[in-house]
Image (cartoon, rainbow, N blue to C red; front, side):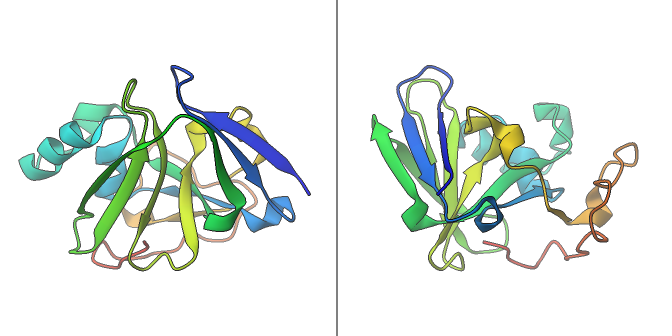
Length: 165
């Protein structure tokens, strides 16, 4: 059973991810406006950015978000407590984000449609390259200069109104 470790920037939060196989984690790149807004800021800043209706890339410097869909039961907090923020994901669905209250690092998120899964932030893993991306979403919003993931199937052309979480 592969085990992956991770945590926040300041070290106050540490976690362990235990999967039956690496294929149990679906790491994906998302080009939707919500993902562009939320990386790498804290929820209060994200809220202000979402409500500003300005192009989010100008605020974050990020062209996409990247998370791994994992079974919630595979995630175990080993040190510290995350801070929770619940807010509208832009399509009317409530999205819970867990992050470090000290440094603001995102750890995971989940919404009403996630079922028994959570979405782990790529950058919170100690060795993120161990779980490479397997797909992309909202590709019509991909930055023009950004290439598709090599060797992967065609990008899922999901509309902004569709709810992934």
